[in-house]
Image (tube, rainbow, N blue to C red; front, side):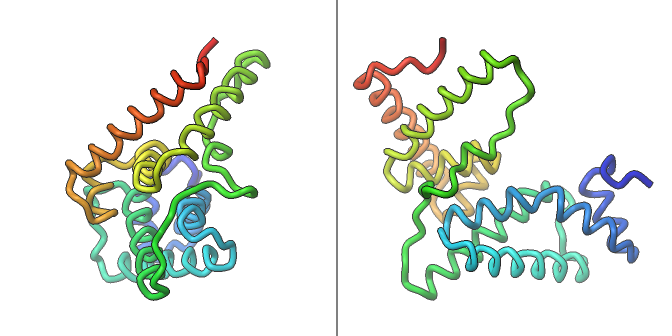
Length: 194
């Protein structure tokens, strides 16, 4: 059986019948995005590893108890679990979550770029670098919404639920992020496309 061709739901079904390999494939398929999202919040590799393991323990437990909601996408569900565990960590340590790239990690480094010719690749890299710089300058709440929307591919409803704000607040933060980024482009006379 070619596990890599199976969708997430089928892998979960196989896992629930005792097929351990299917869960391994599911884990490998999503571990980079889930770990990355955790690291974005906690900024500590060891802590991110701990929370990552806790996420998958929670996922396994939920699957085994038959409480997984088949309507939602697996990755978004796993991202919600990871975000909630990060928030729990910060509540326990009385620190506020802050999403910002570090010197060793950057969200735009993990964005997938399809194979292009060298010129197109260079233009995209320059554009990503400029966008990254703009996102870095946004206030934390706006930066968080931009990252969750464009990196985690979450809907505004999911972002609102995850960050425990109203959907209008999440939409407003994205709107202000875009307005701020446009202002910064104009002020710096940046050209984002050739």
